[in-house]
Length: 184
Image (cartoon, rainbow, N blue to C red):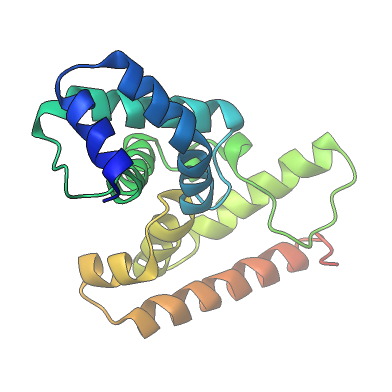
């Protein structure tokens, strides 16, 4: 940790709100990028703002136990990733509300009615998947878990997760194409 960061950390631990403001000013852009990238672009700007605020609020709440030898980037980055994970874990899977599902890239949809129909079709396609494949798919795309994390939690290899995702994407693409949705 640089001397400036150590000074800020020491001030923060004492409850100095000016130090917190300086940290917010310095790291907001970085934290927003971590949240956007870790969520794979699935969060709205409002959600990103909210999570960013949560990260800095958490820093303030835990200021007294802050390790001055850990850099702010590392601490805030971990806090941001955890905030995204918590958001995904607390949210219902999008397949329970098909209006929130995103159209797979490359499919052509001309109007809102076609989009609603495609989302209904995609929801039906997801329900036809074997349980293990649908769980891997949901964990990756709906909850933002990484392939190593999924592999560890499901007690399978990372290559099983990757091949399962690939297989599922192909099945869904085929399912949608057979039902008249053209793939560009």
